[in-house]
Length: 234
View (cartoon, rainbow, N blue to C red):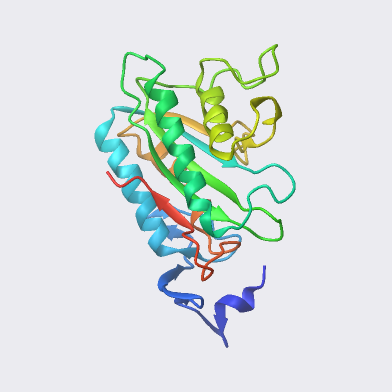
């Protein structure tokens, strides 16, 4: 990482040099919660939005299921120009809502999200997301491997996520292996999922720490006409 990008002499920048409306956050704590600053400063505007999304989810659900996922394009210049790619992540979320609505589960899924777009040296951008669902509806991802037919046709949460991304990028299900990834927690090496009560502050801070990775300034195409971060409005 080029730390000089964020420094003025011996002082740390307070705002991003490519978009002064974005405030840089250097402290390892935000609202008394640990955040990830190992890759450089975070964007305070993004942290504020992330906290809003998580608080809204907790107010709406007694139990929650949280997932960190990464969405990738196939190799090659599949994504095309980066500028229109907000349409792709919007399509993914729309298709995921449709998948969850069609699941026929007794309880409403109440899906909320926060996402970021990043691109460093690869030809395509990629997305990091935090998904928050009603814990009465979902408490696990389900079987993550392909079906014996070679597709993602199971009626579980992970397969629904893969199908939604496949539709968003117009790519065959049979070729989707590795394009939807669930990162692992650094200490336990468990998948980055959390099932917790809304009043569990310890779990809340764990999720916020994991999701603060979405808020880093590094690798964001800021100042290139691309919306780099967003989340649920309601």
